[in-house]
Amino acid sequence: MIIHDKISSLLPQWRERMRVLAKDHADFVVDHVTAGQIVGGMRDVKALLTDISFVDSAEGIRFRGMSIPEVLKALPRGRAMKMPLVGGFYYLLMVGEVPTREQALEVEADWAKRATVPDYVYKALKAMPRETHPMTLFSQAVLALQNGSSFAKKYQAGMKKDVYWESALEDSLDLTAKLPLIASYIYHLKASGTYRKPKHNPKLDYGANFSRMMGVADKKGYAELTRLYLILHSDHESGNVSAHTMHLVGSALSDPFLSFSAALNGLAGPLHGLASQEFLAWVIEVRNQFGGVPTRDDLRKIAHELLDSGKVIPGYGHAVLRVPDPRFTAQMEFAKKRFPDDELVRLADLVYEVVPQVLKEQGKAKNPAPNVDAISGPLQYYYGVREFDFYTVLFGVGRALGVTANYVWARALGWPIERPKSITTKMLEEIIQKAAQPA
Ligand code: NMX
Ligand code: MLT
Image (tube, rainbow, N blue to C red; front, top):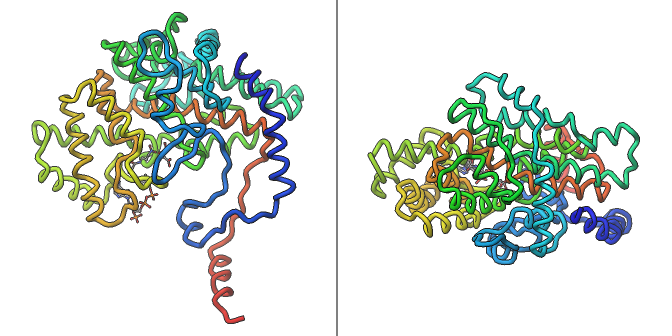
């Protein structure tokens, strides 16, 4: 397989770079940790290494060094496609090079071969109570797939450490190939109570397949959005909850299925991926209250009321970014080009005009700008995907691309189990008191 061969050829030089860092520069001080960071969620502590993506606070995400516009421009597409092939993007994340169209299609073809889901997984989902949250179902289905993990089987059979990454890649390709089928099955289960076993069409690419399995009427437009959406949601360096969970669980040599199921549970939190669902629920509530798009003044008032009630404004703020999220901008541009008059898109745009100032006035949020979740919901809603508690599942399908690439490289470079040190509150206070005493 093309990704396997490429990683194989890159590995010797990467292993040497790791060896030099771990041995020759082991004592080099990169950063320091303050008490504020210890009690403040380790914000900004430079303690993770990844080459898959990087988030600059003033610019946003770069995937393998490329900004979103650069990725969208450089990556190959299929005939008459506006957005790149997801298979080509996966190649970029895994290998670090822009693929040719043939290489991108090779990844797509490999996915097509793996795009089947064992019947017992569907049966397990069917057996769950209907009101179960889609993210719970999604995480369960991924966990159920663990039964087929090549990594777990080979590990039990005594696999050598230097080839862990090969089984990790095998599982990652399997997992990412199966996710659209599982996600669309969950979607139909929740949307209409039907048990529709989706089928992958090998003549179509990953994005088109997913949009077709979702049963969206404007398949062409939705397939373009799906490709864009999956690319944008794939990764956000390694410190966010889902990526970090995948990394942490994987460091115990839990296979990609176990690790990704755990990552999904983190993504399901309202301060992380669930914010997309929450943003849409909020703007729909606002629209219903005013019978349409409210005035700026009304929206200002409602935003203040939401903050005064102790809630956060979903889709706004970020732990790293200090500017509008370029993933927000890319999706807003997509919407404005294709359906600028849609009521919820206009409302999301008005929220963007009003809310940053409201958050500034409140004075708490370090970043009053929108993140990726302040627009993704209205786009899905426009295409008829209206069960908004399903939106985080879509986020999860995208996130799998980045976190599995990280998983493969973590095993390839032999990274150890993650185990930072904790101290007690008393110890922290004593460290501070001791430092304050005159020498
Ligand atoms: N609405 C209200 N308050 C906010 C918001 C917001 N959108 N963003 C930050 N704050 C508050 C935050 O709760 C904290 O309050 P307190 O001091 O009372 O604890 C204060 O501002 C300082 O927080 P920050 O340092 O600016 O943000 P932090 O890094 O802790 O958290 C988020 C980042 C993203 C969790 C936070 O901005 C937030 O809760 N946003 C709304 C939820 C959201 O959109 N999450 C999705 C993030 C992207 N994703 O997809 O994962
Ligand atoms: C993400 O995409 O993971 C979010 O923007 C959260 C983050 O980066 O902290």
